[in-house]
Length: 394
Image 1 (cartoon, helix red, strand yellow):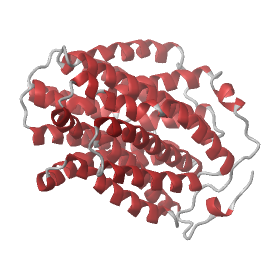
Image 2 (cartoon, rainbow, N blue to C red):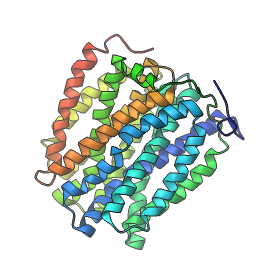
Image 3 (cartoon, rainbow, N blue to C red):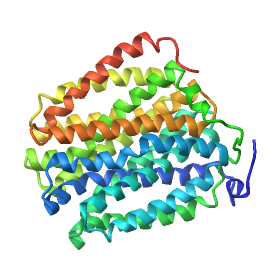
Image 4 (cartoon, helix red, strand yellow):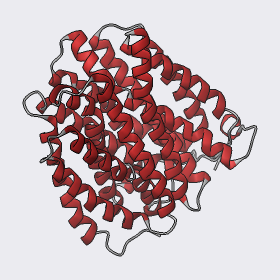
């Protein structure tokens, strides 16, 4: 293992300070991700864009992540994480600032591509750093960190409504993201990160990881779960405005309510994970999620549908920290590279499922398309029972 001056620099060695400040990086990613949902309707109206074209926002936001995170994870393990974290936050701030000077839909898509690349890279560096800082009770600390992602996702629609009412410019949300990025940058510089890195790591380690069946299966599950979460939260404002006649401001708040539910679920999971093993919790929650998604097909009343989606947010919000933590038990080395596989799978789901839902949403009601994702979770009820039975990873 090696050290260098940037990655080993810190002003305070407090693990609690590191937990809070590194988790604030997850707040940034949650804010950037949730900012997409309230933008969709104004973008569509401004440029006269149909839903299947508008859904390209999701494709561009997550397409590049599928491949790039492999390189980011590998080089972070090879060269150290803190220098990458600082660099990506600076680039996220510059990208967010660029939105305020752009009025072309094609350029917007390019900026969403960059926003997604830098955002998921920041998120991955956060998780891998915290997993190595807190090696005992990982599930507890990672759930706490993921609460910050939820707080960012809650805040984005609220800030969007506030700024849009003041400026009538939907892109003003990105000025707020720029300011938040700079504040977080100043806060993480004094934090203590895991300073070790391994210059001897080889790209073949990715192939070795992909030969572990449980690691592959849990990441495929993550791909399906994360993609479905984004399809629900990302299209909720459009669904409630265009199909169910709800006002724009109330529809945008539905995203905040969804992530409030997810935060509450993650807080509960943080404490429950200290008593129950992660794979056990994933197995039980998967059954509940299957039932809730299937039931949503029969709900047309906005209040009932929102209640169902909020329950989904509560339970599905726990999947990300549980999947990430469980993968660490399956393979406990090279945290950034291992997480690169997880986040590449997640990006594939977040690229494909919301894009498909949006494309079909031009012809069918979105709340009648999303329930078909229940098939994924039905299949995994069987997989979790047959493949993961008795293999809890601790």
